[in-house]
Amino acid sequence: MSRTNTLYEAPGPVGRMRQRIVSVLSALAVCGLLVAIGMRLEASGQFEADKWAIFFHWGTAKFLFDGLVSTIMAAACAALVAFAMAFPLALWRLSKRPWISRLAGAYIEFFRAIPLLLLILFMVIELPALGFDWPALGFLVFAMALHHSALTAEVVRAGILSLPRGQREAALALGMRPAQAMLYVVLPQALRSMLPALISSVLAIVQDTSLGYVIPYDELLHRSQDVSSYAPQSLLQAAFIVTMMYGVVSAVLLYLKRWVMRRQGRAVARSAAMRASLATAEVPVKIETSVAGGSLRE
Image (cartoon, rainbow, N blue to C red; front, side):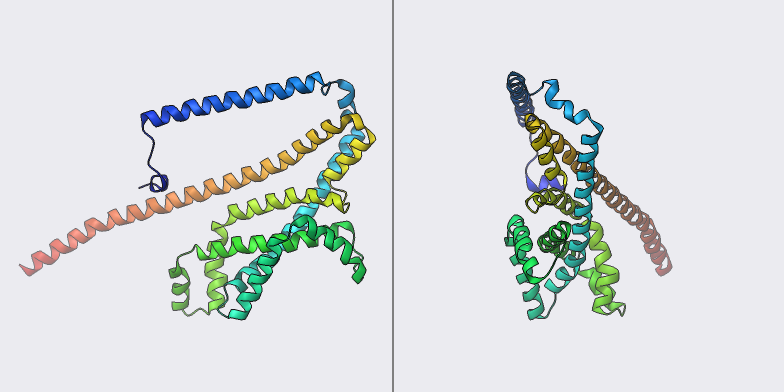
């Protein structure tokens, strides 16, 4: 039985026809909404050439591209620090010592509950008073690392718990210590299974870098605000172009996630086919062995 059939009953001919009708009507409604929005923008003069002219200058394009580079740099630094913190937190959360597990759980629940924007503002206001004279990138990366390490630690913990217990027990039976079993047996398999979720975490980090405009950190959204301040008539156009630039980065990460999931699906299918072929190959051998045993008894 397939995984989808275990969740709901497959639709029949009438159900599939209804789904097609609803899909067509929804697509027509979305197209109609887009046409209405386009006509309204056309009526307000948003497609006039003078409102888009600033974006055809090389200086404006380079200015926005540098903001995109700053966004990617902040996201990469925050992701590295958050992942480096998330794996120990997940292991401590799974610790058999209650006080370690409770401390890790308190950290995770605390930083998951705090809105990231408030955490960034708190870092910018309080840390300089304590003598931390960091650049804006440091405050942004530190706040995002605290927040996303708590979120990613739960992803790692779920990935570890999703593995069968027999993997760890087999490693222990071979003479490995619990730490060695976790490091060499459990974590590699868990990392392979939770890789799509980790890519989704990176996507969330990239999108959350837009909150750096409150510091202000010179990232993509902040630079688009500078462009719209210089050319107020191009406010909507700047927001549209920045949205498209964020969309390109998000599309690349989503494509990478789907590619990883397809690779994992093919690997699972190959392993299932190999097990099936081995099982079918063992049946004639068992039959021949039983026949030979019967002939010897005769």
